[in-house]
Length: 302
Image (cartoon, rainbow, N blue to C red; front, top):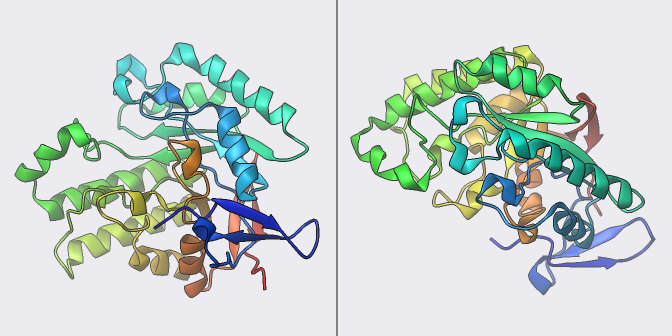
């Protein structure tokens, strides 16, 4: 699927954008919503500075974005895939500078993607308490010492019981929600990234998903709907449509994220994500300022 933000044409009024997809005649059906998940080179696997992401967002017709690079973790945990603690001040300074310079054209929120890894909660909370974030995405990338979404560790899937891995993953996501530390649960079924699927009709996985969603609901957090999976081997939005249906029934709010690791991925497949939400009666999307959630309507252009 191509990105939805290759060409923007202003029509009808100064405040209405129609998006043409990939230069074709396919018209974006919705006003753009905030894209809150994007990274910088400090995580060691992304390209483009904050200005480039902001400029790409304006070109797409977005009016609000948030930077949310991978947080430092204590004791050098997963250091190859995230910024170090010494880089955090420059990360914040860069976002604040671009936020202030471009405020007339774009709202830029200051966010963070913080990992939930049992035993690190106190250190992560201390880091989060040290700055007035607009929002924090809580994500699970590890089951014990296994970075299950890391291409360098994909071979470990060969020795894994897939159903057990899914259950363990959703249990960790539920535990991350129960901490109350975060505002958004990131890519809620990341476990499927490389295409491994739990057995069809697994009651254990169904129960684990439901318990995860109950924890998110109880904590008052938003669930991310992420287009990033469409760019991965699984070729599917995070989370699966089944989870979206369950979350919508529980009236759990959603926030959109492209998980952009390059400026050209900003706003990627936003329409597909909004289409899915609308199919299940979701009519609002979450935005954040100083960790206060503000719900905004999903508005059709027509």
